[in-house]
Each structure stands twice: as structure tokens, then as C-alpha cells.
Image 1 (cartoon, rainbow, N blue to C red):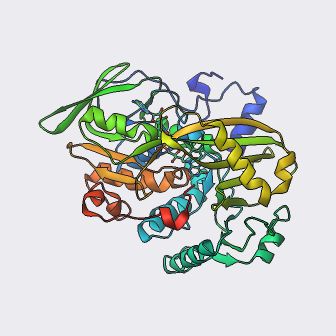
Image 2 (tube, rainbow, N blue to C red):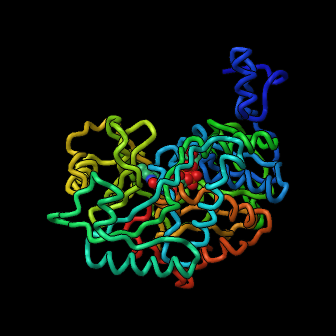
Length: 423
Ligand SMILES: Cc1cc2nc3c(=O)[nH]c(=O)nc-3n(C[C@H](O)[C@H](O)[C@H](O)COP(=O)(O)OP(=O)(O)OC[C@H]3O[C@@H](n4cnc5c(N)ncnc54)[C@H](O)[C@@H]3O)c2cc1C
């Protein structure tokens, strides 16, 4: 939809809708512009996924830095941000994780208003099923940890779960439901809208979002970043933030350093739409499947990563079968649904299953990666913390523990055992 900027409407509101209805929707402004890159920017961000865009947004909003280019090799939000199953929660075990994920959740709660863009945040409640004795112990421990972190979660019994979710089979036989970790504030948001909302706000602040522009090289001199080489030419910068999820190691190699990251395919699938039957987000970590129902009525289903490293952006078939088979025991009604679509994304996994927000061995280069299978929920908090890191050149309280040095110093933030799965 194109319109002349002069008679366009900047702010989305009920009045704007009424006005545009009167003039047959000819006055809407493009949500973001698509300029050619300038020769130089104060900050270049590689990757227009949620994390890159949120970093740019909070650099502008919190630090007044708007001389920014966000460079994207495909289309904005076309990486993992547009491929995930949109689970949002902050019930993590370790304190640094709970802090950054809960900051993100708090920002999500008002993000539609903040961005003037409906991200369809739906805090319908999130339930992690305990289906082994080990999980009971683990989740009760998380409930206690969350109490100390001021994150409200509770332990719920199988009977309560059946009342909340009538379609569930709690009796097994292989993995009966023994209880659950419930976070009432957890839920979902529309993934594309999160990227689009941030993009629109960044563009409105005068930042350049440059799509279809792959970064192919990083120039450094005397240990300091100078420029990036891209499909649209050389672009100089004072600071460079690499926020490219599944391509993190590739970008780091261009700048001459290595990251403790493995890249793996993670996939998801959706069923045909059905009537509303599942008003919760469910994670079944022992059998390794999770599901929620979209606004359209589709059951959105995900499982684990492939067991081998790759960059193929699609998952293997046996995982689809394993995920659905695992969930059918607990949700027998799924066996009667047709599956419509299946897709994959490349996730970047660290050994402790916690992210990296860090300075790097090259001056002026910052890296944000390692969110693995669970970074959608973190987007606003990560952007907030990353903006602080890029603007000040050192991490603030939220990012302090997530530096690269933790891998040298053995200060792991171990979320892998605690969650079993991290979506
Ligand atoms: C199937 C699946 C299900 C998931 N489910 C959940 C979930 O339920 N909840 C949750 O919290 N998280 C989930 N995740 C994880 C979540 O999607 C990611 O952690 C998050 O989206 C990462 O965002 P990002 O902005 O860092 O990366 P991305 O959205 O991948 O953005 C990075 C961008 O960098 C671009 N890029 C890469 N290389 C270059 C280059 N050389 N030049 C220019 N641009 C480049 C890419 O094209 C991409 O657009 C899931 C992921 C997948 C794949």
C-alpha cells in the first residue's frame, strides 16, 4: 500500500482508522522507509530480527542515539523472530536470567502502547508440566527461586491442571501429569508484529533499516572496528552490534574472533484451525513438546532441536513425528488433527543455555547471541540491556553476567538442567 507522505497519518488510533475509512484508506503512511545506506553511521546493527530492532529502538529512546543503520540480509523479522512459537515467560531458575526475562515480560506488558502498534500480547498463562519425579523437584525449586526473585509462579496439582485444561489426559500411562509450574503472566505475542512495531518506531526516529543487504565482511584496524562490507557497499561505523542469531559464528569469524556457539535447526508446525480449546501455553519438557492455540485456532506445536549442527533453516522429518507422538499421549485430541505447515530456524546454542551480551576482543564490536531456542520472550529486555552496553561501552546490571568472559572463568549461568527445554 503506498501513499503520499504529505497526507499520511503517523499515529495509529481510532481517529486515524475513522479518517482513513472516510478516504478509502489512501492516506496510510508506509510503516518504515527503505533508504539506501549512507557512507557512515555512529552505530551499525547487523540483523533486523527482534533483538537487533529492539536494541536500535532503546538506543534511540533511552540514549538519544539515532544515527543507526540496521542491516538485514533478507527481510526484517524473517529470521527466527518470524519463525518461533512465541512463548513468553520469565520463570527461570538463575537470578541473572530471571532478571532479564522478567524485565522483558514487564516491557511486553506495555509494548503495544509504547510502540503505538498492536503486538497482540496475550498473557493467557503458561504451564510447564511435571511428568517425572525429577521434574517435580526441579519445578518446585524454581517456584522457590522465583519467589526470591519477585517473579510470581506457583506449583499446581494434577487436579488443578485438569480443571484449567479439560483437553489434557493426566493419567499417562507412560508419563502421567504429576503437577506443574504455572506462571499466570506468561503467554504469547504476535512475533511479526513485535518486529514490525519496533521497525516502525526505529524508522520514525530517523534510523535506516536496510533490507536485502548481506554483511559480507568486517573491517578492523588497530584492534578497532572501522566498517562493514555489504551487498550495498562499504559502510563505516564507530560501533558495530552483531545480532544475528543463527549466523553469529559466521559474523564473528569475519571480525576475527570465535564464539562458544553451536548452530542447530529447530522446527515448529501448526495444525488446521479448530474451535478454542486451549487457553494456556503448555510445555511438556520430559516428552519434549509444547503447544498453544493461535488466535486463528491453529494448534502451534514445537519440539526439540535437531541432533546435529547445520544452517539449513528447515528441520528433519523424524523430529515432527517424535514431537507429535510425544504430545498425543497427553493431548489425545491432537491425533485427529491435520498438520498444515512445518518450518525451521537456526538457533544459536551456548553450553549453559544462556545468552551472550558482550564486548568482544575487537574494540567497538558488541555481540548479542546465544538465545538458543528461547529468545523471542527476551526481545524487549535484551534490546534494553544491549542498548545500554552499546551506548556506554560496558554492560549495565541486566547484561553484566552474560559476558563472554564467563566461559573462560567458569561462571556458567546454567539454565539447561533447570528447564530441560528453554522455549
Ligand atoms: C522453531 C522455533 C521456535 C521457537 N520458539 C520460541 C518460543 O516459543 N519462545 C521464545 O522465546 N523463543 C523461541 N525461539 C527462539 C527465538 O525465535 C530466537 O531466540 C529469537 O527470535 C532470536 O531473535 P534474533 O533477533 O536474535 O534473531 P533473528 O530473528 O534470527 O534475526 C537475526 C537476523 O540477522 C540476519 N542476518 C544473519 N546474517 C546476516 C548477515 N551476514 N548480514 C545481514 N543480516 C544477517 C538474519 O537474516 C536475521 O533476520 C524459537 C526459535 C525457532 C527457530
